[in-house]
Amino acid sequence: MTTNLRLPGRPEDLTLPALLARNAAEHGDLPALSWREGPGWSTLTWAEVRRKVAVLASGYTALGIGRGEHVLLMMGNRPEHWLTDLALVHLGAVPVTVYATSAPEQIAHIARHSRARVAVVEGARELARWEPLLADAGVPLERLVVAEAADAGPHRTYGSLHASGARLHRPDAFEKAWQETRPEDPLTVVYTSGTTGDPKGVRLTHRNIMLQSVRLDRDVELPEHAEHICYLPFAHIAERILGIYLPLLRAAHVRLCADPAAVSVAVRELHPVQFFGVPRVWEKLAASVRAVLAQLPAEQREAIEAANDLARTRAGHLERGEEVPQGLEASYLQAKERVLDPLLGLAGLDRLQWTASATAPMPIDVVRFWAGWGITIMDAWGLTETSGVCTVNRPDGFRLGSVGRPIEGLELRLAEDGEILTRGATVFGGYLLPDGTVESAADAEGWFPTGDVGRLDEDGFLWLTDRKKELIITSNGKNVSPALVENTVKEHPLIGQALVHGDGRSYLVALLVLDPELAPAWAAARGIEAASLTALAGHPAVREEIARAVEAANARLNRTEQIKRYRLLTEEWGPESGELTPSLKIRRRVIREKYGALIDGLYDEPREGVREAP
Image 1 (cartoon, rainbow, N blue to C red):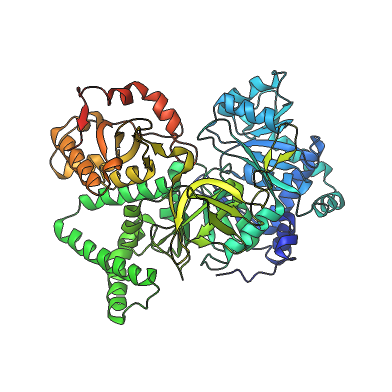
Image 2 (cartoon, rainbow, N blue to C red):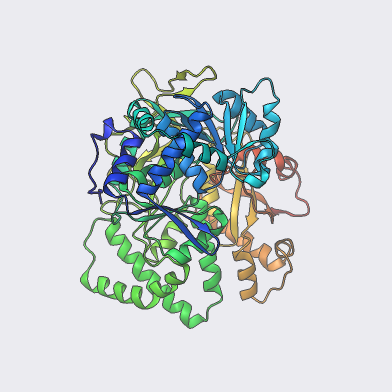
């Protein structure tokens, strides 16, 4: 549903501050931003947000921040982050959020590359990585602002900056500054999370983001002023769109969730109408539901499975663009009311009207699992370089397992090797260079090579195959998509994560990770006692079940794609330990380096812990 709110100009002529001015004037009493404070929530209306932003803008002006200047931010999803971002934009400065999980060398690279003089950080944990840069002659960084006053030490606090802004604020100067901003001016620089090599700075303009937001809004079915639970990092383009830019367009209500691990608690409390999760989030939610179901009596499970079948059959008609038979619709609605909604309500998922995923191919078994609960995940695809999504599934046209069709105004075509090329007004102008200039990444005709490989079906739906640089080329010259193999073997609930290796080798091997939530539930349901995941991984019943899972996956793959040997691991991979990016995409290079000896051992003679696939 396209928002019916008045736009203060043509989309291509808009800037973000113009939307905030409209919201304060026309929707000033509506809630804009909420965050947890003690047992409850604190909330700012749109009118209050704009007054806060104006004061903060004056504070940052007094700090010497000027138009076009980059300012680095490393904070969680807290009001200081959200408000600072908007305040800097109103000055014509460029906020650049850095992932909180970034290593010191990545932070140093971004600080040098962006030429930022000021960074705003959260507290002691961040200061430990940022303070050494103040003494580094090769880094332009001059000053740190700290959100947590108790941790600030000699550095400027966010509170004192806000206070000085309140003293020095001049409304005429504030209004003049934002009105000088042009659509072609930079709105933000987003540094890619770096699955390989150093992060690249992607410069996005107001026009890029405004057109992306307006076009995405046309494909999203939501009531006006809907709430959004904001839990992904603002360094991720998806949360910048969903948690900052779209809410300004829609005058929506942002609920900040400072701890991503607590998002399920927020969902249970708020019962949102929309929810976005990267594939790993949907996988973990599905694993949690499956773990609960495994503990239920057989009779109750049978009733749930029957309701799941009805929901999936109904979704199949909608997917094909068919009218749902009247009898099926009636049976589904009854099962939804009596069986599905009460269970979904326990998790806060009973009011969902729009659910989506992006950033990586969604495992089809996870998509179909949620379809069985009446939740159709509208998978999308895009990159930081395309200002967010390029393709989306829509309620009136979707294919489960695909990433949808192009948004308005965006062109797609496939290169000879299957790489997806795109061009349009939402594609960035280029990568930021250390001297502040921008280098185009498009060819002479404006086509940007995305690095993703896919296929287009006869109805124009895009299906992702893999990342071009991640394709495995075996020693006999065969190309293999690791994501295809990994997602196939992960369809078994015991397997939470997987990495397939085989570049330059004659066959594939795999590292498999037990699901830390579902594996104990699976074992308990079968009377298997184990004190830890390590003990479970060594249990004969678990090992045999994993062997059957690999065998079942291999039966669906061609000979080149089949896993010959594998090793079962028990430690879940994550951003903190380095195996996943902050957006939960797998870092193949890191895992290969970390487990190099183990992977090499899988090509040696079989030994303890190494399993031959059946």
